[in-house]
Length: 113
Length: 111
Image 1 (cartoon, rainbow over the protein chains, first blue to last red):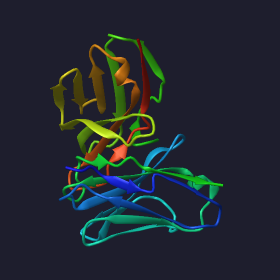
Image 2 (cartoon, helix red, strand yellow; image 1 turned 180 degrees about the vertical axis):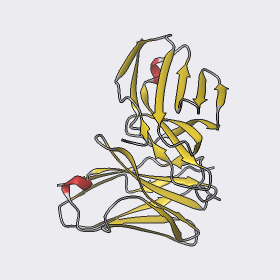
Image 3 (cartoon, each protein chain N blue to C red; image 1 turned 60 degrees about the vertical axis):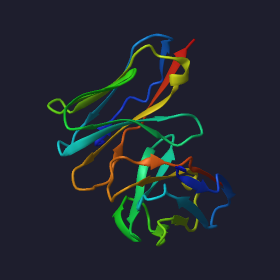
């Protein structure tokens, strides 16, 4: 079974731009969660989607948004990028909503200049 | 105070040593406890998963949960250089709430 895939793997953007990251979960998994990982803050939860609905949301500003499609693929969007948004963005999939067994993708490394 | 506390290390041990990694938490509602391993430039991978208190063993890895002390541990026996990675503890409540991760402990196993 193929694992979680994320595209692109690396991105360089400048302040003020916007970016869209993509995540394809493991086949059959319907829940997708997004995390931001930085050396200072560790792994921080952004949001979770299940059956195209946002179930949980972390403490991030409205510039961070996401959506999930009917095939369970998910996208995350960050608008008006700031330098502090530079991070590794990880997507994790699980079978059910709030699933405790999460499988992570390799992440997208975003650098904001 | 963070919900989950984990010493970031780094922790450096010689090959063959027994490694002990730990996390403390404050929310007694946590029932699911996980350990993830993350190699450099990779996503975390699930190592161990435990529900409620007790021990769980898988090869060289043993996970322990002490809910009375709000303390979880991961032991690695006969550590190998390939175990060098960051280990993250994680926990969640019953009912499908978000998973909370520790900061991660960087482990170096020297050959």
